[in-house]
Image 1 (cartoon, rainbow, N blue to C red):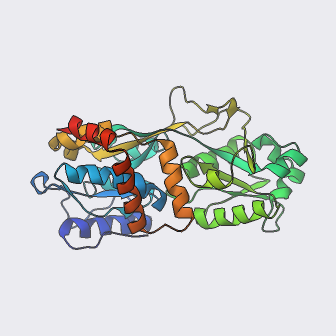
Image 2: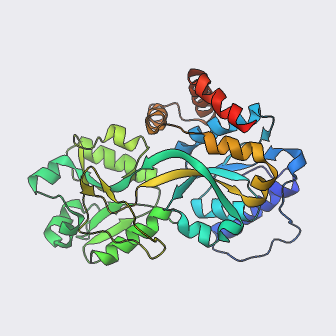
Length: 339
């Protein structure tokens, strides 16, 4: 994980917050840390969950800088820690709050008293389980529930214990809680195990498996480069779930059906989430946040460039600037709305 350089009190406090949180400590005190960015300094502190989300963060950073703010380099941080840091005023905002997937993280950190959603930056992000198309067709597998059958589950066994290996989400990601809930709700514990280590390393193994004709079972989402390489309807197929079942944190009517299939995960809006005190003292930033909309296709295309080797932070900043330059009229309208 990349952290801020501890060059001032606020960044040292963030470093402490991240370190304690990642080692399991919550509800702790930070001696000598008072939080609270000084609005007059106009120095903003963002964070993102994975490098694949830096693109949208950098687009927002460019706009903020054109509005006169200074933006420090964003940090790659687990999603639960991002929410905690923003609520405690050691970060100002993130462009990667998934609603409703990250509802739990908001509620655990003071809700709307501390955190404010300022608008949807990427619309209708979907998630779900997929398997390779060859296995789906050969064994007529269309539904996750079929993995209760040990014979079906064993097709996806990669470690020799007879259970299907489902590539899923590591601790600190909201999707992990949903997958763990599904394993219980659909009675899959006896036949399926959740591989939740390094997602992208595991996905590289999945891609190799599919490309060499081997079975594969995994969770993914859009926008992300994975579905550009393993295209649904071509190399892989989405699996349905038997019925919608989500953790108790989800309330009201949740949309989980995409193109006629119940994928089992809520269709999410990716939002810009900010610290309440920051938003209240920076109305121009809020108006800008409320205006920004980045097409899913733009994020996916940029992610594909990363997959092809342009995957450093410098590359991603260049991608963001190129997108802004190509969409300058739209971008100027966001700036005008902020002024």
